[in-house]
Image (tube, rainbow, N blue to C red; front, side, top):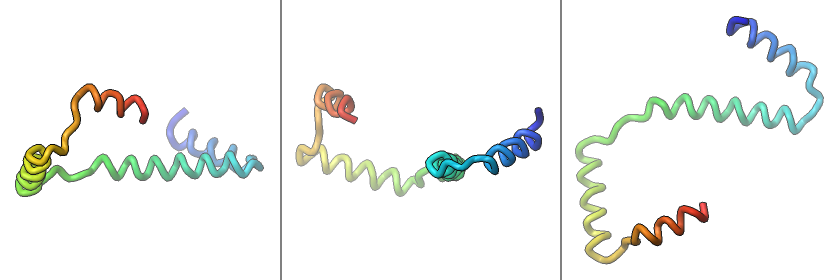
Length: 79
């Protein structure tokens, strides 16, 4: 089945759906797909942005705003 036929079939199937939760889920998936598509075109950092981030990081390190790899791994497990 080609792409247009698939889309047509999906549209027909959606017309038969009477479940509000399912329709909401489909809508959320379509919204996510549009967002994910837009994020594919994120612009890279400029040189100035990279330098600014590096300077900020160096300041954080100087004042002790860091975490050990061991603690980071513990935090990640909670995500």
